[in-house]
Amino acid sequence: MPPVNAAMRCANFEERRERAMALFAEKGFGQVSMRELAAHVGLTAGSLYHHFPSKQDLLYDLIEELYEELQATLDQGRRAMARGASALSCLIAAHWQLHAERPLQFRLAERDLCCLSDDQQARLALLRKRYEAGLLRLIAPQAKLQGEALVATAHVLATLLNQLPGLLKALPEEQGLGLMESMLVGGLERTLR
Image (tube, rainbow, N blue to C red; front, side, top):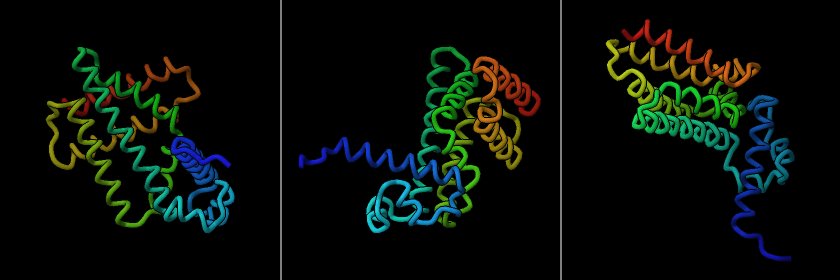
């Protein structure tokens, strides 16, 4: 039997992560046993621990990866600004695309975050706060709000960017993007002036 190369091992690992994510999204993280997870991803229960130290670690990795991708959308917004384009339009399009590519991760981050350990939840909360602060600095660098009002505004803005694509997915992309932009621009103008 020929040796399995690193690319194939990596592809198998990614495929198993995708299957696990689909099972978590379908049934709910807390409803999936380790035995069921192992069978679903094509491993024995014993070898599952070799690939994933625990269900919580796998869920944490999936949500952490989403926050890394969200952070990357801010870089896209900065590049758009450097070209003289609207950072907000770029961010809306980037979030729409990310939601199309990773709808299950958004669902898990929203619904199953509470299944993680306190430490894991705290680490993800820091990632979200970093993302939210960067988002607000990019979109509204001159915001007059301060303190908790500014933090709350950043949280709401991030929540809208992350959830509106899923709520508007029945619309054609162009219409959905336009509606998102109208809602966000209108809300930002009134809130941050």
